Length: 346
Image 1 (cartoon, rainbow, N blue to C red):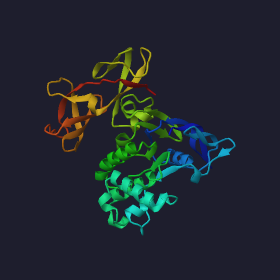
Image 2 (cartoon, rainbow, N blue to C red):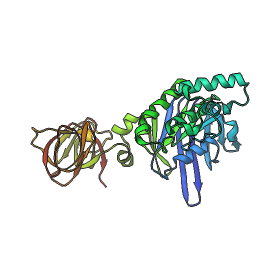
Image 3 (cartoon, rainbow, N blue to C red):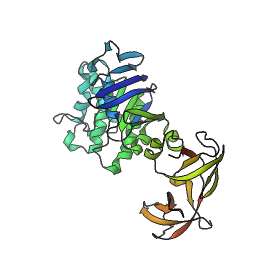
Image 4 (tube, helix red, strand yellow):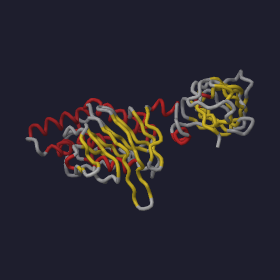
């Protein structure tokens, strides 16, 4: 089922929560709205679910207009499944009964078979008779997803589904939820402020800022080819160094001339801030180019070093953990930037 928003807006007193937002999530695809608190992403979810009415624009599901000028489909008729951050399970019902709850219009045999099928899909067949308080947070969230999928909704909405879970279980659960959604062929839209969750689940991600969609793209493109300075700052880690455009594929910087096609065309002579990701900066003991270690964070297999260039400009670098350098030490680096992302210097 294809989801489409066309120039959708929603304002509250003193704030434009959603400002002329347009996007498409293809049938069977998983989309994500990513952004800081207050960017409007949860309001978008509420507009799709029918909990809020848009002030302008159209919202369509499978070609059917759910809301638009002079037209409104109430939430209970939209066939949309919701997964909330607080799980919202019935505490007095076991996992099987929670999943079956949304199938009240079916006979008991159909309800039971469908609920068992969904619990098996999310890996909880053995926990079917457990009450919510007997399950871990991750298991409760999988029950909530199974319950949302049980009536075969045409769209599943997930509102910050991992925010109440420990960080060490989020990535594993994110992969499990993605696998369940794909297995069901469900179209889904996730809302989160955590880019790791977005990257783990979504086929396309939209970065939101102050009610507007800055970029809607594949995760790889958001990281390597951000179209705005905000997206470059918000997605992934990185730093900026000053440069001057010498030609279509050459930028002069304090680290020398960097060659590679700029993701957006800039005239010769333009002063740019060039984005460097940590994986663009390579530790190399043989290099004459040196930078001072000013911060270090041990991550097990690697260190994340913050380095200071001779000009004082900071850059980030990932280094295998057997290269253990002290703060204040000067280490050799070289650049291996495959994607030049530069924004005109303000």
